[in-house]
Length: 205
Image (tube, rainbow, N blue to C red; front, side, top):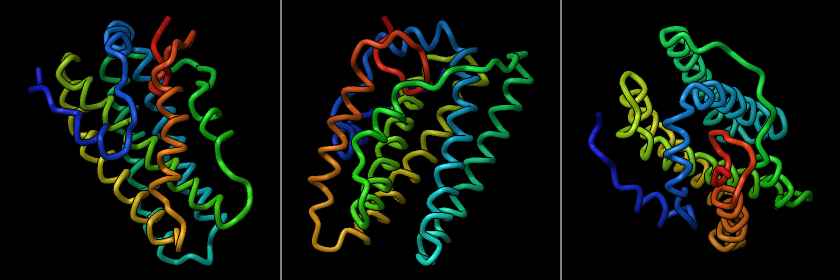
């Protein structure tokens, strides 16, 4: 097992609530489902970065940074698929969690506010992933434990990238206040009772 890692800095910097302990308990019991949904999450993360590239092609700095991010997310997807094969975990189709849709409903629709919200939302998702990887790493058997411990560092970098991109494009807007507003929605989705179990679901019922 890996040594436990303190999640406090991640939570204090971005997240407004910690993942419930029961989510980690269930994740360790249902690790096969977790791994399948994790593969889906890596594809979604790459897709999100590519969507921003297509939507804001005139922003060269943003497209350059997110092109690299998309490639890294796809590499993580490949690594998860490899792990699934090694552990004989079959792919199953899973319905989307309420998490992403709940966050999308909180985003503004007019520019430039929408871009800012999308970037802040990206930071929150990466921060939650980081927190859960850190919490899972010492609890899961090998090779998943070490793999998730390594991914936590990547998610922390991704969180930082999205926050920097948001700050650079915020202008006179108080982006930290807006981060907190969206963060309140994220915290509720990640901690409230949830009939589904997913990588980004709330407390399992």
